[in-house]
Amino acid sequence: MMTVSRWKIIAVVAAVLLSLLFAMPNVLPASVRDGLPGWLPRKTLNLGLDLQGGSYLLLEVETDALRRERVTNLVEDVRKSLRDANIEFSGLGVAGDGVSVRITDGGRLALAQAEIGKLAAPTKTGTPDLTVSRQSNQMLRAAYTEQAIREVSTNAVEQSIGIITRRVDELGTREPSISRQGENRIVVQAAGESDPEKLKKVIGQTAKLTFQMVDTTVPLGEAMQGRVPPGSEVLPSTDAYSPAYLVRKRAEVSGEMLVDARQETDPQTGQVVVSFRFNGEGARRFGAVTSRNVGKPFAIVLDGKVISAPNIINPITGGSGQITGNFTIQSANELAILLRAGALPAPLKVEEQRTVSAGLGADAVAAGQVSTMIAFVSVLVFMVISYGLLFGGVSVAALLVNGLMIVAAMSMTQATLTLPGIAGLILTLAVAVDANVLIYERMRDEVRAGRTPLAAADAGFSRAMITIFDANITHLGASVIMFSLGAGPVKGFAWTLAIGVFTSVFSAVLVTQVLLAFWFRVARPKKLPIT
Image (tube, rainbow, N blue to C red; front, side, top):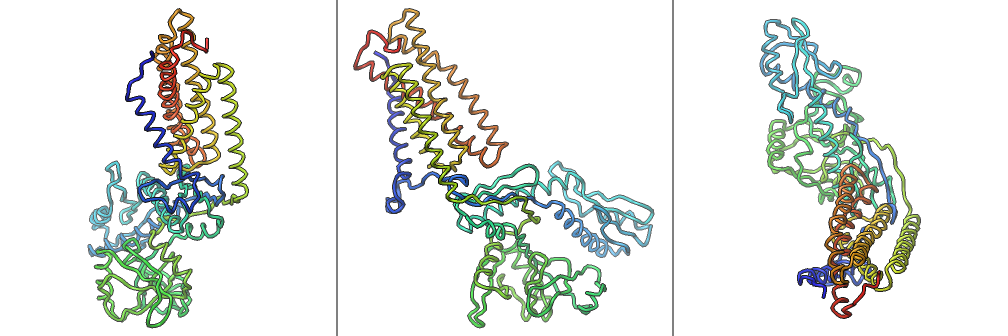
């Protein structure tokens, strides 16, 4: 009698029951799923963009704009550093990808170089991110290193992915696929979102919020004609009071310090406003700035445009406030979503956009079902013809368990099933049967060598294991590589294939072994029906 350990029987029964439990929600109507007790699983397979329709965007992070911004900020940092050290200078400005400045007293050039050098911060490799070099007896040049620029660009892409994910989640889009492509591109696939323009509007806005003091030392008319004081700039306005404002370049408080933003209606004026709240550091800085500048205008700047410039009537020390403007409920809610998700570190450029209709997705699902059914029937016919109704039927039963486990695993992990994922599922069926073929052919060889049916069956399972594990580890390695380096559909294919590797080994080895052991116990055959 073929011996099977008790743990193998328990493992097979438990796997089948759990698979049925986690796969069951996929065949239940939504109303029934909603009424299930809380302890029962309700998650179903997520269909990808190509199966249920939705929007696709290919975005490019404009890291060059980020580099220019850092150089512009460096100008202000150098100006403040030299002024704090009482070092006279002139000609401070952007020169290429760096900053140049002329030190009035050449004898203080070394001191100026040291003061500017203090602005440097360490990179991941431990080297300073800023170099300060002498250009002449009175000229200094400060520039970020290539290592620092690469790190900033890499961080900008990673940060953008996180922010885009939060923004898309705020829209209620289920399981968006957001991944990096190349050095500075991001692929966004929002299944079920049929309006790419809405998606692009929410994703693409930088939403960089800053609070800057309005410069009142020069009339706006003169500033717009070119008389802009150092350290200030003219920004366009979207409010109804002025076409532009002259504001200080340095941001006193930034949107990164916000912890919440909500669309509300002001109970006194009835206006639609966006209420915001700072974290501890932001509240402290906001309170200090408003305390020092009572009676002066304070500009609220979003993406380089002044949306409001109210006068500071009293110090605001509570850490919260309101943004007023010509808001509708929708526009205020969209701004609140952007502020809650955080500002993008750099602008995004839409390289490609397309929409997959729900009809095309339904056609893809139908085609996938037909192809899977054809593959399953083909495998069934082949196994029955090659190994008879008994052994072929056992293989098909193991194949059904395998498919059930894959559906359950993908539902439990909320993996997204794509059209390439269906291809991976079909490939998994072939791989699973391949293991059965190896076992059965080994049994045949053992019978031809003179072994009894029982001994041949035991040898078939034990001696085919090395080949089975070798083949599946190769598949698993390929899946890991595709999942790590691929994006979108490639990842869907790799994930389905990886799940299939584990379920195939389990079903082809344990499920088949348990079923055949039961047959040996009952039939006690004198001859194997596959010889």
